[in-house]
Image (cartoon, rainbow, N blue to C red):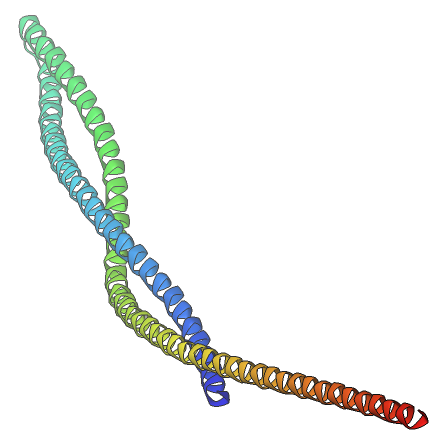
Length: 269
């Protein structure tokens, strides 16, 4: 009985320790699961961000290509206008010389007419070149902005891409940890259940022993009561027997006395 009590106490301590370890493993399992879930979610979010950044980079690159084409086109148009302006200025100088050396008024008027026409074209070309310069400045500014944006997005993609392997490694680590703690939870749960069964078996044995002891104690008590009862009965019978003997003795004594009195009475007569 004492050995079983000690065994039950040890098993109870073992069960408590197993339950403690099981709860700890469950907490670690939840942490690992939460980390894995957050990391997977983070990786998915990162991949979306990378995809969005790449789309933005593609858009910016497309616009940058368009702006470069516009810049080249404006530069060609500007160069062509400058070349025409140069020719018109040369033509203007020639016409001015013709006016100066005209032989007649008619030649002079014709030269003046050509001069006015050339001057108008020069003014138009100067205005066109100014406009082209303004457009070129705007496009140059836009190109700088788009180049900066492209550089910024490219750097962002590099950082995001660099973070991806770290998250992937963290996912693998957290998944392995989750699997390890899941096995520990199962193992500790089994140990706890096994210990519970052993404790139940010992408690059953203890209950059986206690019942057996109560039964034995009841038998001893019944035997003791029976013995006491027999002793009382025996004493009672002995007392009755002594009382009968005493009564018979008193009766015999009384009879003898009566006979003696009768004998004395006859003698007196």
